[in-house]
Length: 113
Length: 112
Image (cartoon, rainbow over all chains, first blue to last red; front, side, top):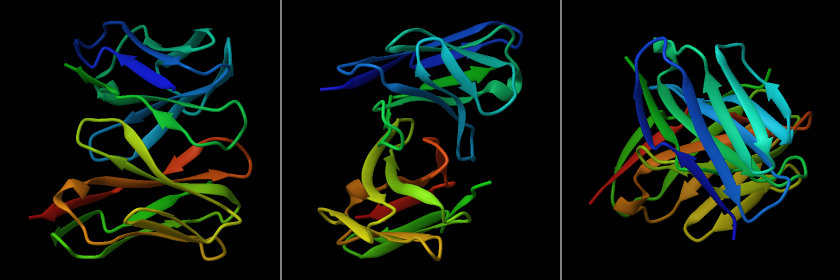
């Protein structure tokens, strides 16, 4: 069966520090991968999605970036965190075909102070 | 641009009640609609997926309907239980791609 992992589970970082969140998927090949952010009191916002290694599409302009160095690994990064980057970050995967069910990871709670 | 709205934002009911959660979307050109459940501080769990050609889907005590032409979906929960307490999110995928657009969610509390 397929599983999706995210780490760390919780992170507290100072403003201006770098960020690296990791997401890995097991049990499937060539998945579509997604990064979402859920800010306090707001809905889920799609940040990035990837249909293959090295292929990243960005949905919103921001100081975050994403990379997909391996088929089942998706990384969310920042060189300098802002206070507004605080939130709950969720990674998801779906089958390689379009418009399939997305399965979500457990999330990473990020607090920028 | 697709916009998804969920009403009510929060709902508190006594155990055993049947309840309806509403979801509306502005662009009817959707491929499918999904309902998710999110427990506090956790990821999302997919509950039901309705293809655009379908009218409803059922899973246990859950029934989701879709009226694509009017841009509406409802999630019906029968005989609610305290364990149903969570935030329920609906999301749509437009024909144009494979990205989900989420509503703001309905936070449900079922009191014993």
